[in-house]
Length: 294
Image (cartoon, rainbow, N blue to C red; front, side, top):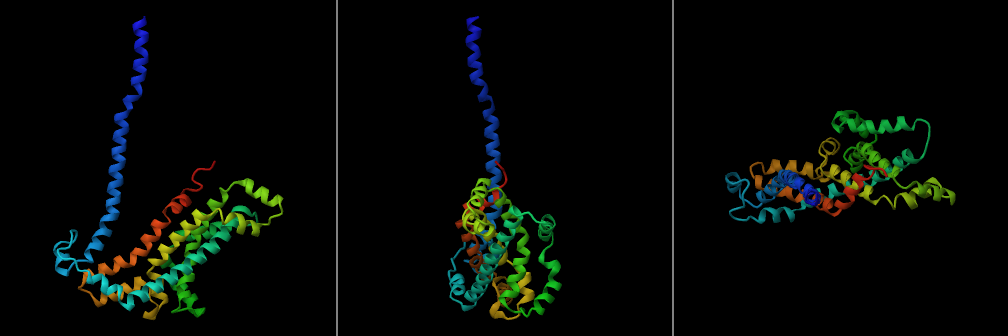
């Protein structure tokens, strides 16, 4: 009897170790999957950046490998050209205006939907969210007519306002989910002290909403930075072209010099990559806020 009872704790101690091979195989599967996904994203970026350092013959013979001779002039010629900085400035102006207005109006509208009860609020919210179903290309003709009637053709505002309008649905949805998960004790304490809705929005809600502000800001910035169809329709002057339209002209001028096109693309996507890495923690916190409600 003593031998059997003594053997039982040993078997019980060995029991949890039986699942270790399963856990290790799961971890291996997860790491392999993440490496494959990362490779799918990183390999095109790296090959594009390296392609900008090659000659045309080297690019055709070895599109994914290291350059035989590093052609630094492909990048320096673009960096020191006035056209590049003009297009980058235009893109930056349009993107910053779009981000500011999207955050401003999206946060105020989401605050009303999250904390103020009024007749028809659910229908109005659904009206904004239904805009997520339609891309800008489906409304480009009536949008052009409206912008033309406002006299905003070939101006920055003719591009900014449509981008803000199409970004309102996503921003309202993200802001509303975040605002609704803020501690309710803050609202009760503020209203007991005589704090109104507007004052609470400025002094309490916004300071606590930095993660979601960063999330909406980065999404709006990247969307505006890479937008092609709206600037193509609304802008006529080359001096106001952002980089997506500028690269079209650049590709037409250097139709056979693909290494210069790759160098231009690399230099234009760097701002969005840098902005993402700087706000990465806030973006993750903003996107996961409200996923689990305590």
